[in-house]
Amino acid sequence: MARNAQHDLLTQPAGDIAARQRYVLAFKKRVEQMRRKARVIYDKRIASEVASQPEGDVRDNAVLNALYKDDLYQTICTLKLTGQELMWSAIADTVEASADSLSQRFDALTKSNTRLGSVTLDPALELPEELKTVHIHLQPGGYLRNEGPSDLLAGAYYEEGGALYSRGQNVGTRESKAECLIRFLGEWKPDFKPARILDMACSVGASSVPYALTFPDAEVHAIDIAPSMLRYGHARAEALGASVHFHQMDVAQTKFEDNSFDLIVSHNAMHEMSTETQKAMFKESWRLLKPGGICVHQDVPLRFSELDSYEKAERSFDKWFNGELYWTDYAQNNCKDMFDAAGFDTSKGYFGSFEQADKTMKWYLAAVEKPATDG
Image (cartoon, rainbow, N blue to C red; front, side, top):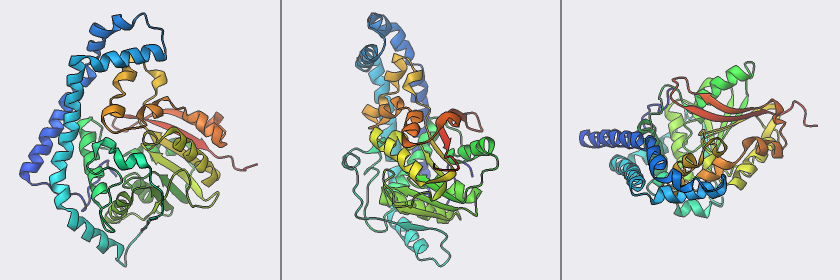
């Protein structure tokens, strides 16, 4: 299944809106090219000023403060922020107009006698206060937007915005993140055949569906906290002919039984979580994983330990201007340490990058196997 798979929940923009989206795509690509050349600002205007600062946090903070005060760099940041806002504006016209038809599609799918999967919501689940006020990626209405029992808007925004964003970042489209991870598993553990799979923090289930299609005999479950995302994910999976069971649960404390999954995964989720939530997810992964099972948490290849002061400052944009509250926390966390603290033996694990099939992107993978016996 290719990245950004087509299905009948996706909106079909009219000619003028499609033209706007093409313009936004070109704009974002141009700004990204400018951003990648911005180091010249640091080299010519800032490097000499901070050279006397000791390496470490002191120099990192000095570079961060100087870079974001620089007029030319502020201009690049403004253009990048404008591109993100234009993207959502170009998507909003079709998504908002499709609200009723999306709800009707969801209702039809949930009542169908041929339904393959399910969606179970928990109105009592306590949602993070910060996500009620901070809109991740600047998405209109935010990740937790919920307009009613059949609302799919947050999910529709998320998928269509993500597709346009990835094209603007020149991320390849031949292979989804899940397929990349599945290919990794095939190389790392070629005889591994999971019977029960859990996708943690699944959003709209774009990474859940490939597991259901790749392992048709497996029982696939996917969890997230956002109700509209889960409804959309369920409808999307049904539209793609995939059997996935979606649940509204917190990754830090699920309601599944101990030792109940052969494979546990997450995709680009860790950087949306606080450090404490990440640690709890790793512990929950240990509790839920069967002996002999495998856990893989995948995310963007952002490790501050591998970057210099300029790169750290430049990559901090998303925390300050794109609603990514925990972006720099993720960049400084050590997944190996969190796996160790959860109880896993990481000496035979895999921690590092894994390249997409079309060579356009490398993802960070943290993979471990639970010993065949708990004791």
